[in-house]
Length: 413
Image 1 (cartoon, rainbow, N blue to C red):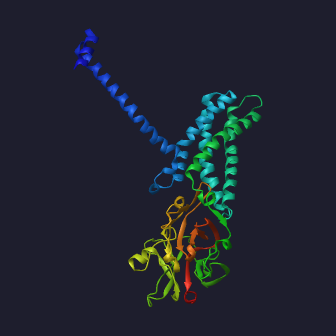
Image 2 (tube, helix red, strand yellow):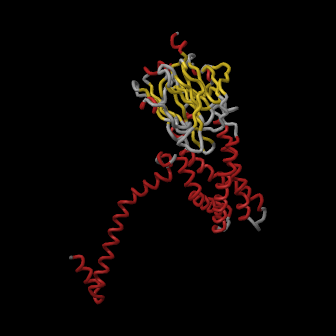
Image 3 (cartoon, rainbow, N blue to C red):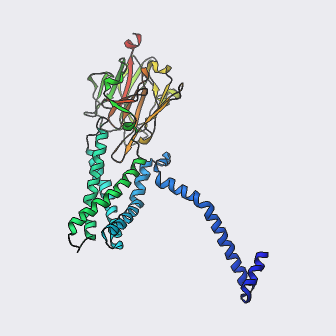
């Protein structure tokens, strides 16, 4: 009330109504300033967390790389274009408005054309696997940089139109500006990517993994879509069934025999147009083996009639003597979640993943083997194994939907 009287005395002839209005205006501005001062650090942290650290995005709503790419394609190109345009205008004495406009258009063109179409088609055509994936990653980093120079140079050349030695200056300007922005953009995507498969693990040959010799693997060959088997430690593969599978999501699964609970049936699951009604084909029946039933089957005690390769993730089931192991393994849904190994006794934890703009692989069909090795499918057609103690990962051979078992003869021995 005292503040209201003071303000009324100051306004004099303008009257009480004006005084009240001025007082209210002062109060509103004061409250707004206080709110802005108190909330600004929190608001800054929120914005900084969303923009500068995309790897903290919620996995349930996609991966950090998905968010990083979406923000780049929708809003990041405008910010990069503004920065490149101002840098171009400052270093080469060009008009700011013209430079900024040209670079915004150039960035949207190169990002959408190069990122979604050209780069996507190139990556899909590359003969990429575990052994050469890291090499191809750096090749694509260099190729994308060159592609950016090629796609955006005409816009920079347009800014130098009518200037003496425009070609030489535009090439020089393109190298300077694109190098500066590409370094920032590389850092943005690096923060959002998962590269621990190559940066924290050792990629080795299968012979360096010391895999158990008793394990036999059934799998679908990506070459002809038929079912083969081979020893986990190597040797020639044997064709056992004419399946003619053509879908990446087709896989093999093993479940208790319907006629003898001590035996197992190897079944091929075909993906159909109706996902709720998959097609099943008996490959082998009444097998005298030791197997690792799938997680949902072991919990319910009923055969598992669902789950494509894409959906076969989660905790690894144990095969043979692995039931007594202190290690536990789990495959995540997204590529960035990869494969996690944890030791219940020592508390040790190991995780690896691979998800980058130039390739990504999910981990599926995970089985905990004897000798604490892990058998899994990487991507669509790579059958691999992992040693968590030595942090070694190796590509065994190409195949999909694999099922490892131990034959009764080996169990008795």
